[in-house]
Image 1: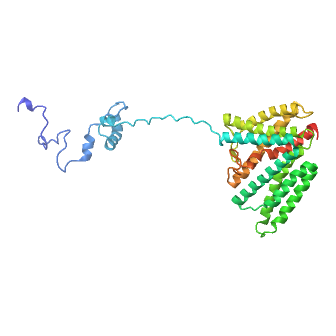
Image 2 (image 1 turned 180 degrees about the vertical axis):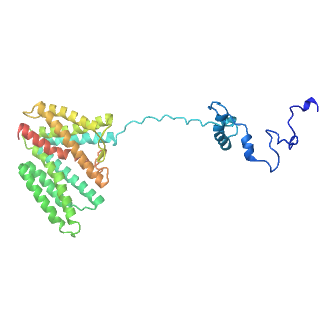
Image 3 (image 1 turned 90 degrees about the vertical axis):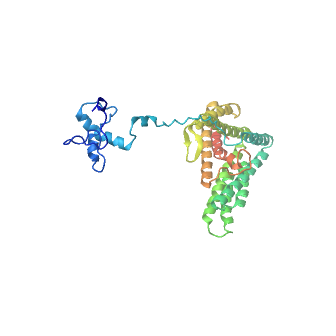
Length: 367
């Protein structure tokens, strides 16, 4: 045997000298190979992060290392060569500006036109302004009864409501509160009788809706005509209109710019507590100015109280109208006024505010 054979591996199948076992590190060929025995003699791989503390530590991690090798890559290089998922680039989203829910140009134009008609009729001939109130009441009743029939199949009789509503406004101007109450009672009676001409199914539902409509629209509007009967009636009505519009404007402006906390999300998701504070602030400031310069005998502190009351009643009226529309499943009561919806969508805050302003002005400066 020459020197070149030293260190060369034995040929495959070589069993060694007689009396000795197989060569260490080379399994025998054929079915006689014992896989379990081979695993026991397999060199233990190096487990990263495990300190070498001798044979006991090697035995402790042998099974874990074997499981890792049978379930994953055989070599650490394979794990290092696996492509890593690149993070998804974050595309910056453009900031969205708040937008108004309506066409502001149309809303402003219609508002200015209505304001011109109201002011002209208010300061020229009071009777003409009473007629304007009566027309608004009739149109509002038509919108309300039409939506009730379309969405809930409630047939509130429109004819007695329209006739009685217009008569209610005129009676309030001519006879005051007594005339308004009498006209309200007669209108409710007319609704009960008129509905008797149709089948009895749904009678109670229809007349209840009719009486509600008579109270909600014409009776509350009667307080505006009652304000007009005072010596400074035009100024009182103008104060009522200004405070209500200023309150709505303050709520919209502040709520749109700073609104974060919802006021009544289940009724009107767009209204915020910040908007309510804006309505109160704007209305109180306008009330102090109006009572000081428009109302005979009024003082600024009375205007503060009047503005606070107007902001509260206007907000509640708006929420009440929103409750009705949410129950009916509609956004607007009508489409007569571009940018505003219908007549009832503009009367929602005015109607409940009218009796509040009338009462406070009577208490502050008399009739």
